[in-house]
Amino acid sequence: MLAFLRKNQVALSACFCLLLSIYILIAAARGQLKNEPLGALLMWIMRPLQTVSQGAVNWIADFGENYDTLTGFRAENERLRRRIQNLEVERQKLLEAEATNRQLKQLLDFRSHLPAGAVTASIIANSAASWFQSCQIDKGSSDGVRKGMAVVTPLGVVGQVVAVTPRAAKVLLLTDPNSGIDVLVQRTRSRGIVSGSLENGTVLKYMKRSEDVQEGDRLITSGMDGVFPKGLMVGAVIKVRKQHLGLFQFVEVLPAVQTARTENVLVVAADGGAAKN
Amino acid sequence: MRLFLLFFVASIIVLLLQTTLLHLMPTNPVVPDLTLVLCVYLGLYHPSVGAALGAFMLGYSVDVVSSRIIGINAFAMSLVFLTVYLSSRAIWLQNPLVTALVVLFASLIKGAALVLVSAFFVSIEGFWIGAGWYIIREALLAALLAPLVFALLRRGEGFVNRFRTAAQ
Image (cartoon, rainbow over all chains, first blue to last red; front, side, top):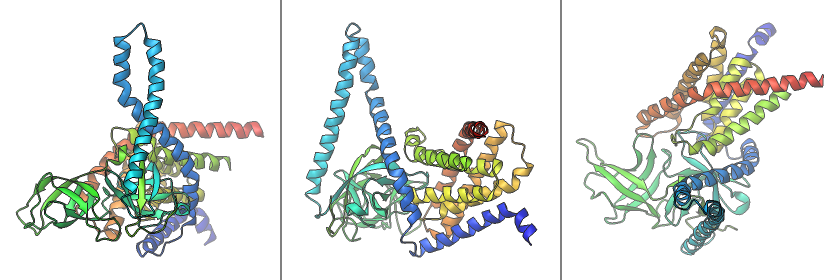
């Protein structure tokens, strides 16, 4: 027996890990997995590294957008090339400060229209897996963030907090197949659920064939799911197709918020639950 | 102990890359699955109890930072490790092309495992067709980068071994 165990210890360990992961899956699916010390430890290790790394990513993305301007200046004025390069470096810093200032001012103005207790946060990391549309923010339970809170920007809905540690939180984006946001078509007040889809992008589900939905219609939160305050922009309808069979029509949605270009967000409870910032 | 530290640091770096820098790639939102490549490396070159637990923890870490359901990637990574370990004795590993092929198939196995688990625990319309396209693209990206990652890990191991020899 011992010889068998020793000979197959690797395979048996891997089988044990398989069974353990199934157990964790079942517990998580039943909602029994509330406190994860390992998860909190990992987030504690990763948070500062991700903050620095995401800062570098944002700098690279901004530099790429200004690249054409730089080459244009160089070609146009060869004699003052060195002077212009120095000015561009300074200008880049000022533009970045101005953009950050504008974003934060927008957030502050927007925050005044939301229930009290909104928390400002920055996105520090994206999903590690392609199938799951999520991101991490740099605020957690010690800042008043709780599971189930809505994450928004002045442009619209970003997603919902699904896991919280003391210093960070995981946000399930609106574009994830597991998400579901109760919305109204602003023009006709028809109700539906906006969710992500691996195949078709973001879609509006359970829209009956008899409902009037057109391309260009704006979708706003209904406020009836108890998560998102009412009236927040979710997206716009870009395609409507009524299939020959079925109760519902196919509606594709363009989300209002492009998370790839979003840096700062607001975390808010629909009922204005207490939070500190 | 030093090898454990090497792979621990490699895991942190890989996770960091997957959640930040690799999203700059034009293939976004499909990101190369470097955690899978690391898991395959452990299964091929370091088949041990510690490596099995390491593969599980790699998947669990991905779940913590990304997944809606904890345990889904832990299951997939454990399955990949077991499959790679069981088949490693029959694979000739000196050729980078073979390495890439092993990672490609491991990625397909992982994708299939994720779809299977999702079928039991998640009910999402139209999941299967979209998932298939993601699986193929992820598998190809991971296979392309696998020889480079393997070479870097081997270099890291060589450095650790030289350091250990010098210390002795």
